[in-house]
Image (cartoon, rainbow, N blue to C red; front, side, top):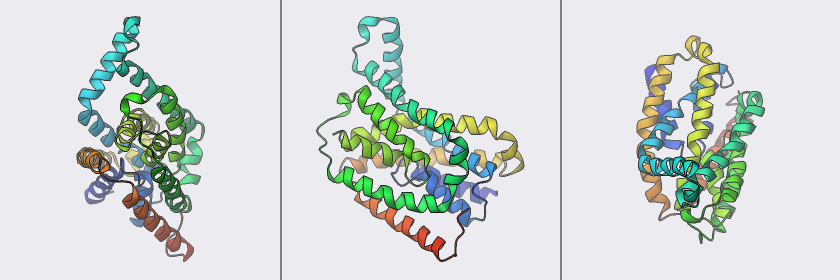
Length: 278
């Protein structure tokens, strides 16, 4: 992979990671269009590893919130009387909500990296999950806010997040949809989606980086992978700030329409034989 391609893919990752349009789905489509075999170990590892750039962007953007939550967790562990603090409860709720995708991801690792990488799955998921998002957004009461989030909310949202292991569904799209059906407001579910992304994306990136280091070195290359990760970090930081402002005043209609257009286009290209599935 050359520097230009790495920069391009890193930009796409950073832009789409937190938008409910599926960053993995977009990367899979673009990697195929660039001529890569999308189910090769080095390509699947590259796709997962560059997401860590978005993780670092999240850590930087929410550093004050994360420090406050981490401090509350540590204090609560040492001092039982502080375990009723909202930040302590929220921290444990986020950790609990992060467990399902880790377990399911490990159990179905081989299928996720091979079968589900097919563009048939990507195109179908983009279109079908748009219906879920439209339902959740259209029926959202938004009566509950971030301070109302409980472990039950994050566990349910975490379970739904597992659906995002299918490229095209979108991790943020899954968590936001689940949060809206729980009555949470759009800003609260968007912020929660950011927090839940940290262990999910970092864990996947670390696993791929360790297990596929040799394949990356002899395939895509570590230099392009690092460049794409750095670009992902810069673009994701800007995307986070934009998304929080956008969601505060708008619904998900723009993303839903976009997903349907992209997914339908991919399926038509596959059906006509212009594009192959893997």
